[in-house]
Image (cartoon, rainbow, N blue to C red; front, side):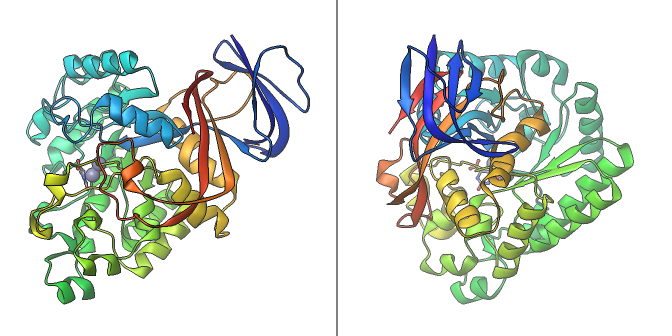
Length: 421
Ligand code: DOR
Ligand code: ZN
Ligand code: ZN
């Protein structure tokens, strides 16, 4: 099977080139200025050809919470968003803390056959923070990392043991950093706007303490660790300092943390409720600077779809989370590249090659011999984000009505067209 992508601007790690790209047997066979082949062709004139995005922090909700999302709806949403590989968090029901659930997810992903899906196993049994699951069996079943996302592992000894065992199996712990005692029921960032709205605030320190703890464990053990969804300026600083000392820490953030501030909570729209909460201008600016200088290695969505009944309740009772997988690329392009913060190559590093490197996944690059996981995007096309058009079951986005650039026209996985606008 051959497919030719003609006349596009191909974004490689070395830069942008006007070129044709030949796909053969699921791989990128050739990149050259003019390729003549008698096969099916896509005309990418005026468009960019990018490596498929890799989103290493996604909640697909299956098994157990299929009312919010399932592997099929999540996969459809992913490829619409230009995402060709997804790592899904284990806070399902049952929790993905064993080989059976991990295998089930992989099996369903194959049946759905849209994007590549890699399960993440729980750090502790049932995400209860008390004992370790059978990490070796989960690894054999295909988990690519461990996380108790949704909460921190409160007990530092358990966390230390988990990091040691995970490292033995070549797995990294992805740490949701939250000191529950300090959050104390907070639902938004603690600051002027929490006082103004009367909504209970959660301080930066609740996140920073756990970032610092997990970095301390990583440093003392010499074991890599990954910090999830960084939202505070002070967290960025802790990570930057640790990296400067040579600590093997990597970190991610999400579009809502580099685009929004907590001014948006004043309308009490529960789609703005997310954990950790969106914070203030200085946090937003520090996150942008951290992404630019590589302190924050990658952009993920923390795609957290919820049903209407979970969100159409008073703010304090609403579920935390943003449905983000269909808007992540256009928002990131608009707010980071079009605004002049970083180059397209840098954005592709944060959204594709860097996650691949962190987790040791294939792909994330456009080069001959690599899997043909590709996106064709039109950067000139402007559109307005409308959750009614989402393929995800989760319509919960604080970005409704935002004008963005960067429409995904095609998504290819292993050379097969999985989405066409
Ligand atoms: O906002 C969030 N939603 N943060 C998390 O840590 C978990 C996630 C979810 O699972 O809904
Ligand atoms: Zn989390
Ligand atoms: Zn999450």
